Image (cartoon, rainbow, N blue to C red; front, side, top):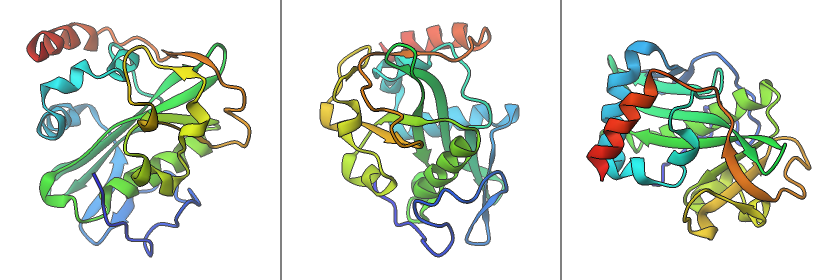
Length: 207
């Protein structure tokens, strides 16, 4: 989905704002996800994608795992959670650490505020500050091109399931990080013992 991005609030492609809450207008902040945000986050993802989200190929890289440290973000405004984005440790082929971006979701009534782009900018800034070198995602190529994502970085990579190749994109946070990347993309995050039984129930609901 496309969002109008307020360029005067966050520097484009600079990834300069790290850690501190990001002000979107006067009312909304981008913050670290907290345990009490789980229910609202899941409700927002259900609204945005429905139960079929658990059947997506990228979910095979996330299921039963913990997001990358410091890279599970939410946006809050007027006392409610209005956006969520998480990034996950993966291997972009054998021995090549990277991150997987997604899912990203914004509440329907807040999609004209630039929150999607702001979440991505903040996430990439934090990932850079934590010395991550590359990010992969599956998404709308024209939208993500503004952040530097391109399908040329993933030509020789294979996801654990079907995907439209033109939507399988990569970004180098460090120049050359995806040079020569090839082979199967695999999950690399720590296992989440609490999430695994819940994920099994979600998959049954989506089937």
